Image (cartoon, rainbow, N blue to C red; front, top):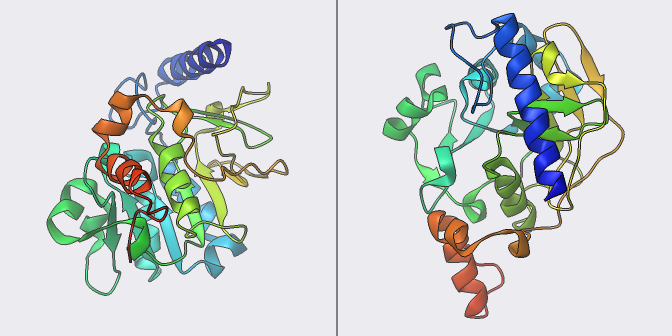
Length: 247
């Protein structure tokens, strides 16, 4: 519980800083969200200049507005993009965006739902680069999201399916105010990022942390029931199918 409280305090501090600085381009509060920020396009350009980006053919990205420029850049660069379905609300919890068949509008989740198929981990290609949304991140790469836990679950699912591995680079794009100088708390089911990209700087992190899979003991029955991919996986494991997601 102390870790949860420390994470909540970190979120609230950063949200307050962002609101005080009025960084949202639409003038909205950051509270409760993966914050949008002025300069997100610049951060995406800075990311696109990195070797990890240039070498990546397949990118998995969160659906939040803050990373919209990243998703658009990936499609423009001819990369396959897997975008998480908001709240993992579908049995196949990722939109598959093929740059040869969808336009840049598909980088927005409300349009992706109309033009892109959904896929499960077993139907996906290995992921070269993960871009995640973040509320706060320290210089070691430890991140805190908005508290729902979806990013951790998405990564854990893909690790279990072998789609995220040691070769996968994990990146976050954030406003400079989201980078904190004090160490953030972390648990064994959290993942860390390898690279932090802001409009002003790129930070390479050393302390890599990856989950080995889904940490079922940290999930309530309500959470499992609310996420179709998790409930299906739990049922498959109960029936003796450890893969739980067939290609």
